Image (cartoon, rainbow, N blue to C red):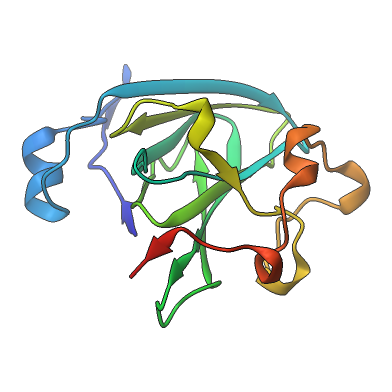
Length: 174
């Protein structure tokens, strides 16, 4: 996983930065062909995830928050990985402009920390509903501090039905 800190050019008019450069991305991370961009808008307390797509439709994602603030998390779900079940969390905000690259073999989710948030992600594979997968965003064994009180968490019906990591048979191999 990679956290990307773009160079921001600010002056009295505002700011400018390159939100994506294929050349720079490939120099720092490697070759990729993004094929789909997604955007969501959510209110405080919304938690989405932890999602992934099963083989052969696995996805890598490059994510960022363009309005508001989110806690973005990726969990290693690759069988045989020394970091299996461990996570990386990063706060993505409209002010820090950070981006987070999540490779294939990681489940992804986020929690909205601001009143509202607009979240964007680039994917290197098209969405295939039949390949949809997930693990429980509330799995306590993952030790993720979502920074949202449980009684304030807003989850979709689908996201409440994902299995715990201990009950999950990962299709990803290291």
